[in-house]
Amino acid sequence: MALKIISVVGARPNFIKIAAICDAINESNKVLSSETIEHVLVHTGQHYDVSMSDAFFRDLELPKPDVFLEVGSASHSVQTARIMERFEQVLLRENPNCVLVVGDVNSTVGCALAVKKTSCTDPNDNSEYIPALAHVEAGLRSFDRAMPEEINRIVTDCLSDVLFTTEESANRNLLREGIAKEKIHFVGNVMIDTLLRHRVKAEKSTILRDFQLLRNGVAMPFAVLTLHRPANVDDQETFARLLQALGEIARRIPIIFPAHPRTLKRIRDSQFAEYFVDERLSGRELSQSTARIRLVPALGYLDFLCLMSHANVVLTDSGGIQEETTILQVPCITLRENTERPVTIEQGTNVLAGSDPSSIIRAFTGMFQKGINSHQRPEYWDGNAARRIVTTLLQSSLPGKSNPRTSWAGEAIAEPGQR
Image (cartoon, rainbow, N blue to C red; front, side):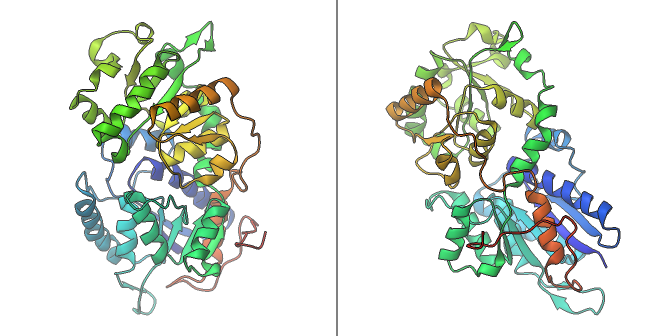
């Protein structure tokens, strides 16, 4: 009998993480002909913009979702409620053994809540059961409950039966919160699985030429910026402080800003447009705007990976980008007061600068001039995290599933405190 897994995606970081898991499931089904996994991919539609969704599916070679919930944009509560309502119907129809959620977006917590409030039916004996819930990227904590993502992480971890962690700090957090040790599996980082698989392909991107960042075939110095968190872009006072620092940095090095659609709307609705050059609107070439932050269209995964790989520094408020730059060995300045990825700080590839202009400029000066000294990867960030996840699920006793199965990849899963 096949193990039936539903995987849930809803936003850009989810797509990157699920891509590695889809690959591992496909590999497992090829290797273990009698140990098949029936995989159902559900897209909630939390990111419905083509540039934020379809482009990533294409670049990552993700299969077309089996189910699309079309929840669209709304407040956190309304969006989460829509996800719960629509995902419940999927659970009742599919009767999975396990639901796998990733990350910390509303799709993660909405589907987690629905799983634990829904009774499915075992087709073998018509008995009722609650599917197992597996959380990929469990245990990360910023310790800032004003962040919606922090609430999503805490709630999802409390509900999960199987918790897959990316770094040692996550193991410690979960144990401190009372999560049973046997539920925690230190497997590594699936986002890094995807990066390592696509890095060579990303080098074929023409994005550096398209953005006029090549001189005699060599990349010129430039920085990459991403901003999307409400605490940064919705609060005009905070946004103004960030732009004061970014404007100063842009006089020293071009800043390329692939703007999230939501952030772009905030810029256009505010008095901050003077800080930016938008070549889509003005028709000016990027090379004519050396003292401005250059707004460019939202990018697909491969184009952005290529751009980030060649940057001298990345300024961001994204958690995932802190991890990706650590592997790419590109200096990262995080425009937040905290991070749920402390391993990136420990590795010396990432600096927390907050929103204070002097702190940001000081961090940029240090990173730009000195670079980074770390040449080690965090443990288990080796391209095999998704394999470890699939191995664990095959070996686990899950509701509606027969005896635990034999490992297909031979991967040993480290438990907290046993490495």
